[in-house]
Length: 314
Image (cartoon, rainbow, N blue to C red; front, side, top):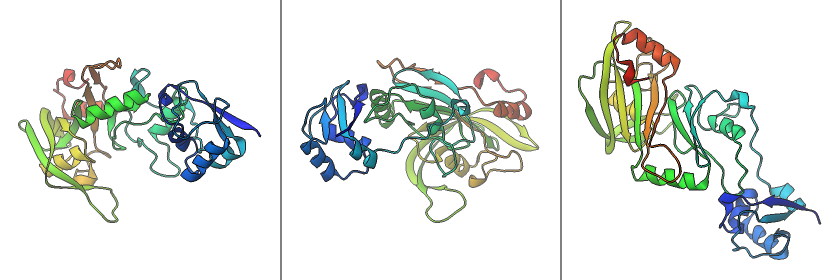
């Protein structure tokens, strides 16, 4: 009988062989997986093993060729690296942080679309882990630009998730909003998804405790409409948090038609994930990451805020 040999990587170390195999062959029923381990159609380092055996980095998992062909995970489409229209802000063995361009989704949204997640995976030079797949660690809307973090190791993914849950990461955005925000405000609202069929997947503001701090940086005029460049600091990370809260409190992002923004001024809204502040760590991740603004955002600011302090945004 012919076997396919798969080598365990660092991120597989210490994981049960049955858990790893469920990633390798996700469509195989669990009962059949256990049976094939017991009968030797799946081996570890050329020998029969137990379903609860923990594998080590460098171990060789041997799977009967007929089983692997029937149940293997579909391979991710390999995209040409030249499609990767982004700037790397930081990269090491644990995390890849990029400056996401506006206009592309983080994860695949439609059958024929290309996502940033696909491009990153196609561009990655990491050895393929059996049980861990690098991927996005948070979300940004399609038309939001700026800092986007992708895991490169299981350790990095767990650390980032723990920090996000505990509020250990500071998140700051820049947005161009309608009206004149005169002073810093802190908003505390609930955010709920609106159910039903609609053109946009939007949310509504209700009573709650999702916090956003809005600080005006500069004020100006765009085609005879008052606008404010706002620095938003979010606590948590709800869907459309900034867009919905800013609109609810009287300052929709210009061009954000889903939340009442004026689309006659610009074709789409300007919202940029500008700064992430990380706590001290042993992963080699910098304490502060800042992302440069897209050129079209800069050009618009030059028009509507001719006297703005460039040191605030560049």
